[in-house]
Image (cartoon, rainbow, N blue to C red; front, side, top):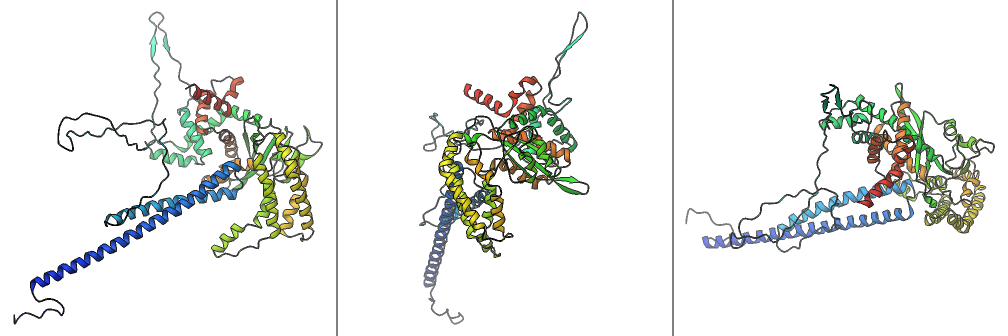
Length: 559
């Protein structure tokens, strides 16, 4: 046609040809889109597999480290922090692997020739039997899904379990005491008022136990608890909660006295202290929290473990001297000068023997030979410290002693002493000679020389472990007891007063002792608050954590 423009070069001029070209172009476009979708799906699947492999590697390393801790115990605070970091890293990698799996599923759904990918997950354990079950029966079919017939007969069922949680529920218990009048004498008879843990109290024992454990066991100050309770529809003022805490501490005082007596009946104690910020006029002072731990489990002792805490405004030596005034035995602690008077030979009721902590002595050497810390600093672009070959060799020598101790942990005292005499004594003698030789080559102000002097000046306290199987090679038992305070300081910021510090020390004693005996502190506190007023003074020991544990175990066996 004369008025029609010429077709672009390369395109047919007839309608049928144009249709064929359009169909071919669409085919090529679809093929390109399919190829792009396939490539995208394959990439998503590869990324998901890589994420899973990375998460699996970290998970296996985490399991190995946990098994090492079960076999040998916790070796250092750094090891504990590294384990926490590994767990956090595993959480992030597992979440990323799941995200990549979902992205791969979506990408594969757009294709027809790419194999899907399913993230391998560890087999989930069944939900605990003690959890209540709520049956939700889905509507049954009313007709056959195949032929539409109406004659259906039940032949079984499939159950899919889903774990769900119900928000904490509050309730008010009304104790109704009916009044009766006598038709003969007109006097009124009525049941006695129910028992309350606190005189004229309004809170039940489980609520009181929760408040105490949240404050002293979970390090949640009362103001934060009050805010959370208000959001749950139960407004409780800060002063009201504080009253309950003070009253409960007074009620539980007899149990604290029994724990204290049990701790100081031991022949050997672990002692340590840590800082506690305490509120002062317009500022915060640095108080101290002291702990003395009785733990006979390392040498197979059957007496239950326990811990006794004390608070002081400062770190003067008179405080541990007062705490241990009536006690004599073996004290495992650091080289704090405040303990020195306790070690005097003419002390009454008798001298206290000092046992040095090899783990404490190892730390300054480890700081000078910390390869991992240097690698971390190098990765962050920071200046790295010089690694001391002498410090590294000292750490390895002390680690050889610690390895022997892990193998005899829980053995009898006689067995531990025999193994130490055979294997540890030669290593310790060789270490002493080597330290004294190397010390002569170092100047007085050298950090390595100071670490060596710390050990050599107290060498008899470190070798005392060879002659007594009851002595532990480290003071980690006391440091573990204080770890909760160190972790909680950032949460509660400071103690409100000296009296507050004393109350905290009392409650730490009860809660940490319960934990050391593998008991739920909150459940035990609730039971103790219920029964403490009913138990005669001569039977108050029945409420101690380790006795309560035996009662729970007996009831479980009976059930």
